[in-house]
Amino acid sequence: MIKKGALLLLIFLCYLSNIAQDSLYLSLSDAIKIGLKQNYDIQLSKKNVEINQVLNTWGEAGRLPTINLSGSQDNSLSDQTQNPTSFIQELLQSNSFNGGVALNWTIFNGFNVKANKIRLEQLVQQSEGTVSLAIENTIHGIILSYYQCKIQREQLSLLKNVLQLSREKFLLQQSKNDLGLGVSVDLLQYKSSYLTDSSNLILQELSYKNSIRNLNLLLGVDVERNWNLTDELTPPVKLYNFDDLKQQMLSSNTNIKNQLINVSLLKQDIEIAKSAFYPSLNFNSGGNYNTSKFSIGSISQNGSSINYYGNFTLSFRLYDGGKVRRGIKALKIQEQVNLIEMDRLKSDLTKDLAVNFDTYETRLRIFNLSKTSFQVAQQNFDIAKLKENSGLLSSFNLRDIEMAYLSSGITLFQSAYNLIESHTTLLKLTGGIVQDYSAEE
Image (tube, rainbow, N blue to C red; front, side, top):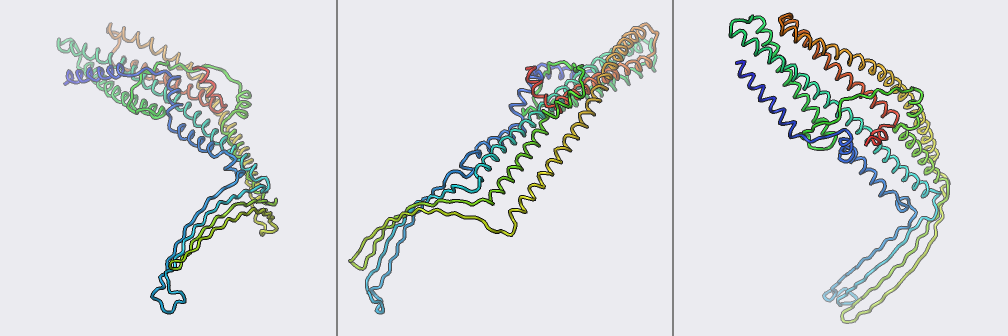
């Protein structure tokens, strides 16, 4: 049974090797390039920019006139030949055609056109701000997902090493027992360790595959695509000054920039509403052409006419029950709400920055400690293997040291990932994540 299990495990390891061989090489910078091009959120937000750019014209703002062309054709036939009460007992027929062109142009409406055009430009800026936020979120997500795949891969390699040792110890102890030189308790201990490590490896492979799927989803590629990630799990060890980070955040954070655009949009809505207090001047012009034909029996008559017109209309709203004033007052209150939200946003971001700054410094210290701890555990593990081979250490003690080595390795990988996460979040909060990783490319 154990030999069969060992064979299945070897097949599984070969399968992992084939996956690695079929994988495409992918660096973090290449992953970011792919994500920026194919990520679904970025594509959708860019389409919204295109929509607002299409609408950002003077015609949409109302500066240009509208011209309408109309035409109609009417026909009637009345047979009065069998009607004794009719004054004219003939076949009556009439045909007519009416065509016209009309121009309507608002020459002035209280600066509403200019205000609308500015608002359309601000809507473009707002949608571009949404794209910037989507890009930052995508880069942030790709970085974390990329290194999450790396940490899962490193843990997989670590488990393979532990499993290889468990397998060798088990097979060696089994050979000793077959020769009558071994102890059953040691064999059972090695067998239990071997099976446990085999299960852990299978579960870790599943975790690794799922992390790759999550990365592919962010990249906008086939979720089943395999990658060979080339960047090392090397966290940054930079030291920052909190006041410098705070100043950079208040001037460059994308959420703050987008909120400023929202405030500007509301101010523009107020300007548009104020245009109702001004008079409006409209110009209407056009022409109509009419032709008709009327027949009474064999007698027919044709006629046509052309009419032109040009009119100016000046209107001024004297009273509307205070509707416009109430609307403007409500908009001004909403403007105050937006300013309060801006202050709250800055406070929230400052708090988030302080938390992440302290977390980054704490994780930096933890990473250095974890690195030293892993080196000690690795040395202890190497010494324990030599002692166990010399018969100076029991299988139980070796297993304890082995698990301590495994635990310290996993802790080191996790602390490295946590440090990368904190550093990336600091870059995102301060608005420097795009520039930082664009510079690396």
